[in-house]
Image (cartoon, rainbow, N blue to C red; front, side, top):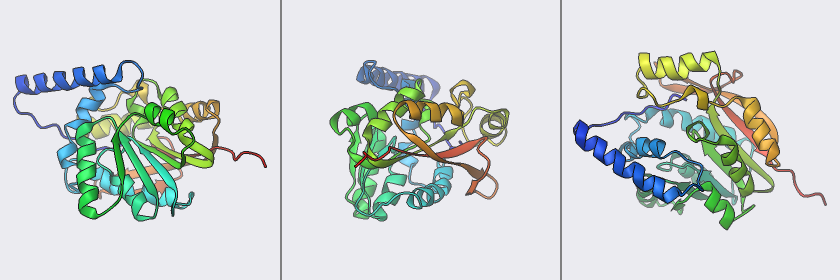
Length: 267
């Protein structure tokens, strides 16, 4: 995933203290029940104030979003559909789905990101429901409550992707769909998403991705199958850093999109 990230420092000691306070807060909030990494949450919360800057450090998200939205819209009915955007960040995908007619609930564990999402949706006049909430908590509150569930660029940042997929699957109603985008664990992904993106092109800070946490399509499909979902389609997602453009691809050996469905209840 070529997610452009830039960390702004206000002094090494002050930044370290701030990060430690945030990490402690997230650790306390999770209490072992949420499949998330406090260090990852701290890292991305620092970017909230620049989330909607299309020329800023998250410019790759702005390039990827139309491609992901088109992929989803071609495979799911959006008008009037209840949709959940898990790990919604500042709401880029959530707003795109809402503009196409979906009734979107966006959840994220970063209060700063949710604040940004709410403010942007209000200024755009979009009736989005944003919550500081985990997938597990939403699934407990509304099991099978969504015709469409999306989880973009999150699975590779959690310690237990299979547990996350199980929570996502619990949200999907019979006949509904789940869309996940993530990065596979291959030598090409290591070179492209880590070596090139983090060390050569500096699209993301060093250490943004951990190779061991990247997820092969077969592993994702196995977790989804165990959760009662069927794999419908895999598609590569290609990002060109020099032209800042994105497109779908037949290759799934770096970034990829997966489309799963929950079988409808037999008549």
